[in-house]
Image 1 (tube, rainbow, N blue to C red):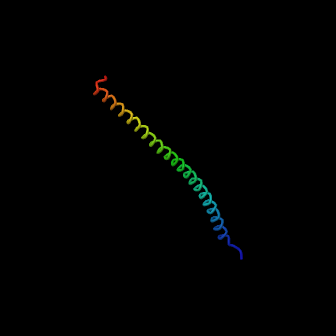
Image 2: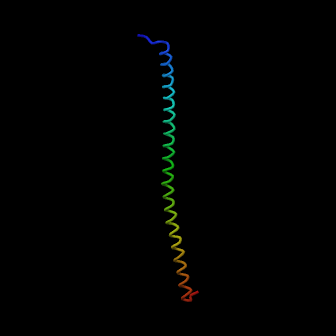
Image 3: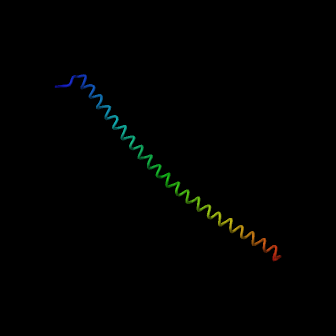
Length: 83
């Protein structure tokens, strides 16, 4: 039992569409892989940024504490009349 010319044409068109779909799927996979890599990079940057933020807060706290200690010391010196 053979195929009619119409069936062969329809089959050829379908095969061409399937090949086109495969190419599209391959491009989508590449795009998704690129996006996944970009998101991983952003996640690492965010983690580093969070660490830098906490480090900045700690250093800032130390600077404020040192300034407060100096101000308290200078105030005490002025009250004792040593200045």
